[in-house]
Length: 257
Image 1 (cartoon, one colour):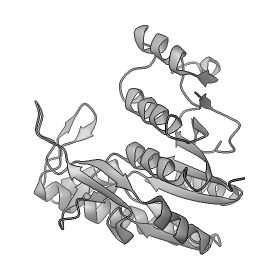
Image 2 (cartoon, rainbow, N blue to C red):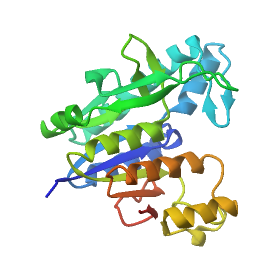
Image 3 (cartoon, rainbow, N blue to C red):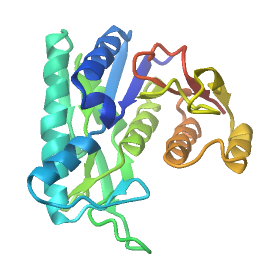
């Protein structure tokens, strides 16, 4: 029987506000068993770009990453945000290790081909090394993964954090019984974002199609749920979308096969 592991992805808004980050890390610390944390940090990158006089360009919620922007996201995601989380986990007694995809070659990607939109140095994942991550975890170390990958040719790439989490979970599914939790500021997937009682408890492939057709699921929630089903279809036991202070595996919207 495989050992259980929890992969938790936390959105940038949570990690960039001290109170919400502290609450999240307290909950993460209390999560039993082996675990991995994947984080965003987009707002911090945007603020840093503004301070440096560099314009941030977003298309459909995704950052266009030119060479200057790549330097900023590498500094912010892999440095400022990542190491702040690692330091705070150490203060809570968790021996954490901050990683990008380039570290230990854990996640390789390729530069997204130009289409109608040129996203620049945006990376689409080719592979994640579950064995290497498993080796690190078995040493009693908790990986904290920034949304950066590399192409194996010396180039860093900006990569969507939800995708990083899904690919990490899929790679670890060969070695563990994996639960993937996406957490942010809402209780889960809502029929009405303004009504806390409208939480959708469970989403299957079939019900997801209906939610797309009637417009209940739209915008940035679509790639999140797409990543969730990709994980489910590749060996991850369960995916949960929930609030950052409710990562107990019970609350939220459960994505199932």
